Structure formats: structure tokens, C-alpha cells
Image 1 (tube, rainbow, N blue to C red):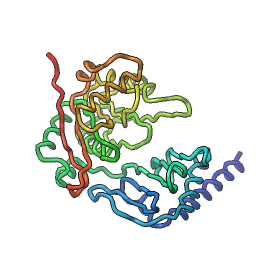
Image 2: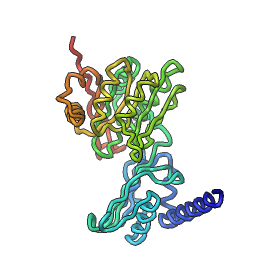
Image 3: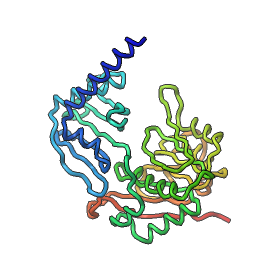
Image 4: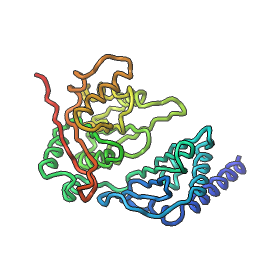
Length: 317
């Protein structure tokens, strides 16, 4: 058994070394940059990097042959293959690459092999940072702080790459600074992206290999005595379980959702609930969700994004 473990470790070490050699020192250095958010390779071979507060910049180039080799190594790590018949590779990268979220594809889906790597947060861009960089106004800052202090359930909405999780982490940081042992926070995610330094925190991850999805974890969460429930991106019928959890004595939760504006976010949440084979849940949504914060990409802003709207849900008497 020891010899087998040693052989597996040696094989893993060789794979990591090959991956690093292909990416090169410039790209590998991005994994050490706490401000880096995403690494993107386009089909023209250009490698782009997005950083907090600095937008997107060009880093280097990577030829198609090297990219294809890298995708093959990623597929090997994920226990699969990449080919014309299976042209997509996705999943968490090795620990040596921070378990970053990887997605890549080869022709014929694209002219040349490409990938996108979403880096996990390593430092928190605080709400104060957002205010000071002009991403949110002073008035917006005050309204979010008030929502946190009064334990509102907050939904962070935005398009792809708008910075939803980074904003959620900023709100999470504010909550953590206000929390003691008497506030137990349970975090549920598909991949580890949410940062929370509160003293009483439990983190849970879904596991596709065993069929443990977000709905199952939300039900389990209720047995863990949560005071606040944080969820990564809401994508499917798990939205119904989240709303039920938020609406049954667990105020002050956080979650993210893909949508173009706050009202669309509520509609999208309703559509996701209906994937659980239930009718419209709009009354439950309006009861459980208190605030929707919309973050939007905006090239006119130095940081590349801004808080475009904050919607407070009016409650029925």
C-alpha cells in the first residue's frame, strides 16, 4: 500500500510539473497574486487576467499545441479524456493550483483550444474598498451596512463575470466582523469560493460523485443549528430549499444568482423553484428575500464594475 501511495504521489508530482512547465512562469505567478480573479485564454492565443479594481489586462500568449497538452493533463487529473467526441474539460484544478475552477474546450467547439480559470478568493475586497474605489456610492454602502445589521436576507445578482462572489465575500466579511460565537454561519457551495472569518462557521461542499447536491445539503444544514445560511450560486431547484430555510427563522443569509437586474433576479429565482416541480413561489420569494444587490460590468468605471441597483423588497402586512 505504501509503495502504491508513493507511486501515485510521484505520478501526481510529474503531472503538476508538466502543467507548470506548459503554463510558464508568468501564468503560474498569477496563482500567487491575491488580487487576481480570473485567467482567460482566447482562441487567438492571448492570455488575459482580471484583477480586483484593475479590470482585464493582457498577460502573455499560449500556442494551441501547449493549450491542448494542458487540457489533456487537466482531463487526466479529472479522471477523463479530452477528444473530438469529448471536447470539454471542466472541474476543480489540483490543490497546487488552489483548486481553481477550470473550464476548457477544444475544436470543433472552438477554432483553437481555450480555457477560463476562476481563481478562489484569497483576500477580501471589503465593502469599504468598494466604496473607496467608486464601485458603490456612500449611500449604497450605508444601505448595505444597515441590511447586514438588521439581518436581512441578501441576494447578490449580476451577469457572468460581474463579480457576484467577490461582492458576496465583501458582505460576508462585514458580517464576520460583527459576529461572535452566538451567530453560527453555515456555508454551502459547489466549489469553495466564499470566505468567512466569523468565529462560528461550518462549510459544506456538494459532491456530484455521491449525488449530494445543494438541496440535500440545505436540508442537512437545518440540523446544524444555523443562524445565517450562505449559499454560493443558486442554479436549480435548490432555490426552493434555500427560500424555505431562509424563511423559517434563519435571517441574515447570503446567496448569488445570475440575472440582469433585481426584478429579473426574483423572476429567475421563481423559475429555479419551479424546477423542483412546484408552482410559482413568488409569495415565498417576497417573504424570504429582503434585498437584491445588482452588480454590473461597466467599462466607464476604473474598476470595471459598479453597483447599479439595490432593491429592498416591500413586505406585505
